[in-house]
Image (cartoon, rainbow, N blue to C red; front, side):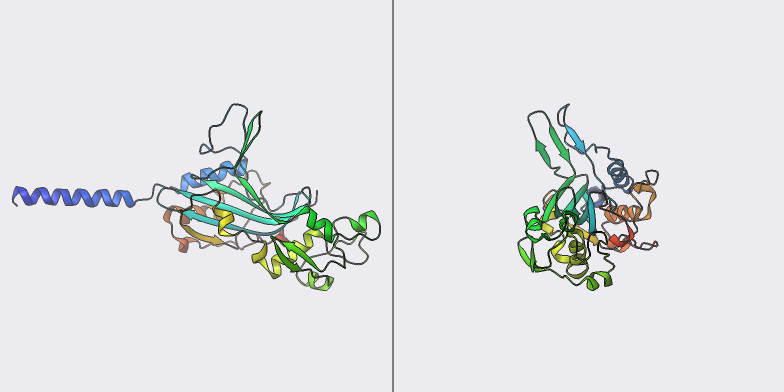
Length: 288
């Protein structure tokens, strides 16, 4: 082979090698699982902004049993390209300490634009954001105002015809049997008229019109790169209690599969063998 053509061949092989190398994902399953473990234990990720010495950093994980949230819907969103990835946990429900219904989003990944609340003394850096569904003022408007104090506590007036959910007027269902058919058990104590509660309403919407209480792509993408491709949304999955501290995500099939999907950017690898149990009816929440 003439030197000229030999050099061209070497250059061609070198170029192909560089191309293959550039196409190879820099994301690893191990790295993804490590970040999920950090969020599970509440340990700030190395990807967090450095911040100042007095700054507080929060790293939250999906919790379907939280005492301050009467959980309704939940999903997991996956995004990735060759070098960046993000898992977005979504949970909706009635937050009893905040007196409002909202969506909670928890972001885990290597490219998160972490929300920062700035104060004179320190900054609070977190991987969590919320989207209001039903405001406290709206709940106050539809609250039952008859009977004893407890008969007015977090129960909906039978005269309330609608509720505003993210600016949309939604009819309120009052028939207790329709709630019961969906597995929603209305409060028994101090509720002789079987009025639906604040959390019951959100759960009813989750069963009958889930889109209205679900996060939009605009909501989800607020804290991740706008050009990061979406791989999939997981509606049903096997969940293990967040309070089983010894069972880290890296030891759970659900998150092992999520890591495979993200590292390969192949949604067909989501092939769980464990039964999905993430529906709110399988977990006690909002009882504090």
